[in-house]
Image (cartoon, rainbow over all chains, first blue to last red; front, top):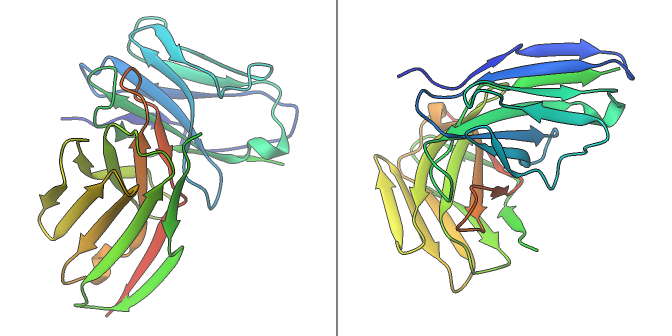
Length: 114
Length: 113
């Protein structure tokens, strides 16, 4: 069974530029999550989708971050404009349903903002 | 507000030693708890998920326990190997309606040959 796929794996941009990350969850998983992991910290949930609807985006900085999951499968996370403090690893995870179910993570995208 | 703490932040042991990693949470009203492993530059690998009604869960050389009343979970690793070197993260589910995980900062383990 293929795992969660993410691309790109690494990205370096200058502040005020925009960037987008892509995630493809495990086949059949209805729930998709985006987490931000700053160096030395545990991941923090940014947004959770159930199919193509948003369940929780309370910690998403909506003035600069946006995410979509139009067809209920793949998802993209965008940052525009980026700030230095956005430097982090962006992790995508999926689970088969909503609720406290086991989550499976992708390899992450390491973003460096200079 | 739920907070998860892992102590120690780093641990170094000789190969073959049995060890315990600790995780504590401030609000005992959790649902499930999940332990992960993270290798440098990689994503998270799920190790064990303990349901809120369970006291412990085992997988190979790993055993995780959960004591909701005291707000604690431990991950026991038997007969540690150099390949166990990684950062171990615990995370709690604080809601029955969403899958939001609240993570600790992790314990970085080094097993020396």
